[in-house]
Amino acid sequence: MKKLVFLIYCTVPILCYPQVQHHTPKVKLAIETYAFLKGQSAALKMIALQFPALKSDVADVEKSSGILFGRAERNIERFLEDELGNSGLTFLRDRIDSLLIDQLKNPIEKEKYALDFLRKIRDRSRFSPHTVLLKEILSFAYHDTPHQEITDGHHKIFTTEGHPKAQEAILKVPIPKSWCAEEATMPETIQQFTSHCGKGDEKILIVVYDLPAEESHIILDKKSISEMIPPESNLIRTDTVTIDGRPGMMIEVEETLNSTDNKMKIRMLQFMFTQKRKLFCLQGSIGPVEANKNLEFQIKKYEPLFRLIAASTQIDN
Image (cartoon, rainbow, N blue to C red):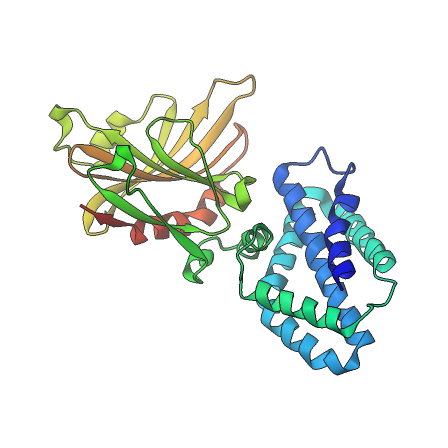
């Protein structure tokens, strides 16, 4: 069975390279995750056929893992159909099936190997241990409704404790487990997270600015916010919010980036509040993408997640 596990993992590089090198990292991630899920399903069918006494065990494993894993597979298919087209997805699916038929043609050597494999899938369905592979599956399981990753309990708490920029307040911020922590380029950013294990276009930033003495008692409203944003940004809307009992503001902004040859833009929701001469900002963003791309659907899709993160943030003085 160790051989069977090895073959499932090996399907990915055989399938993906060099055919899809021109695709984005997220598309490559989707293909790799899709190949793994299809391989795992094929292996379960093989076990049920070769060891009839294990059919009930296979059924139990399929039931326990089917909700999230099946949801991930369906979302990947929708995503890849959008990216590759119907014919591209059909070719990919046929290619995976052909490889699996070839690689799984030899019988499993021992029933013990099959039982070990079933145990590994049970562990995966409980997300224990929480490996990179499971984060990849999670990222696509919640691709259609990103906020549900947190409401279903698949999140971690990031704390600013010990960070010199946030010494006046400690923030505890829930972050989906499938999002990858990365180093941020802006000096005001405490931490940055990127969707789909670092391969997506969506980001969550925790930012803090030092307020000058004359602005230490600033009131956040539409007027003061409008004076803060740079001229290359378009203020789309504002809303009052509460973050751990403190009054704050949410603004939606689209910013044009002119630093590259091709014009790019970012759409973001920023949730702001002040605390002891500091302005804290929890920012959820989409991009950068080409300036002609409409981000209306994407920002609406991620707004429930960004709002949930802000609403669930805790502040310790």
